[in-house]
Image (cartoon, rainbow, N blue to C red):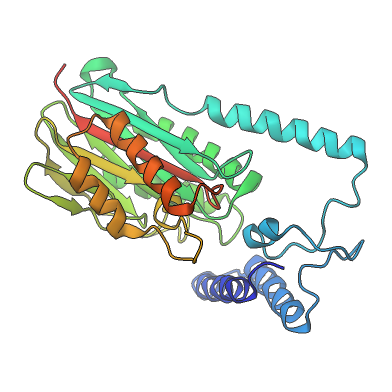
Length: 327
C-alpha cells in the first residue's frame, strides 16, 4: 500500500484548496461534489478499505493512487482488447504531446535555449515552449509550467496552454496582461480545482528580460557576480479567474543564464526520502554556470540520477536553460 501519511496529507490539502475555491465563487456545486469525493476517500482511508478496487477487490496500483488518490477502480473491468486499445491511445497521446515540444537548441535574437523534458509516464503535465514570433529579429518568448495532477488529464490541459499562449503572444499584449488573459480563459474552461503554475518570459536582443512567475518554483538567474531567484509575481493560472500579475525586469549580459525547472527537479527523493531541494539546484548552478546550456542541463540530470540512486522519476521533470548569447 502507498504511504498512508502522504496520501492523507494530499487529500487534506486538496480538501482545503477546494473549500477555499468554493468560498470565492457564486456557484460551487461542482466543487461541493469534489469535496464530497475527497471526504469519501478519507473515510475509506480510515476504514482500511482505501486502495481496493470496488469491482475486483484487488489493490489498485500504488503509483496510480499517489497520482490520483480518488481512484476507486483498477483496469480489471477492461477486456484484453480494450486494454490494448487504451495502450495505443496512450502511445498516440505521447507522440502528439512530444510533437508540441519546441525545436531543440534554438539560437536567435542573441539567445540560446536548451531544455530537457522527462515525463514520469507516457504523457506529462509539464509545459515547455519557446519561440521567436517575429522571426530571428523579434523577441524570444519562453514558457515553462506544470499543470496540477499527472497523466492524460494534465496532458490535455498542457496542450491547451500551449495553443492558448501561442495565440495570445501574437496579440502583442504586455506580458502581465498576456498571463492575466490566459488565467481568465484557462480558469473559465477547465475542471474545478485544476490549475497550472508557470513562468512566462520575454527576452530582447539587447539583453532585457521580463518575467512573470505565476506561482511556479522560482527560476534562477546566474550572472558573473551572483545567483538570484525570481519569486512569484502572481497566483497560479486557473486557480482564480481574476487576479493581478506583475513583471520582474532585469538585463542580462553575454554569458549570463536563466534556469527554469518544474518541481520534479527539487522534489526528487533519495532512498531515505530526502528531497534534492533548492539548495542543491543553487549549488550546481553556482559551480557550473559557465558551462554551455546543454552541458549544464546534463549536469543536473546526472546529479539527480546520482542523488536518487538511479531510480525512475516519481514526477515529471522539465528544465530549461536560457543563455545570453552572441551570434
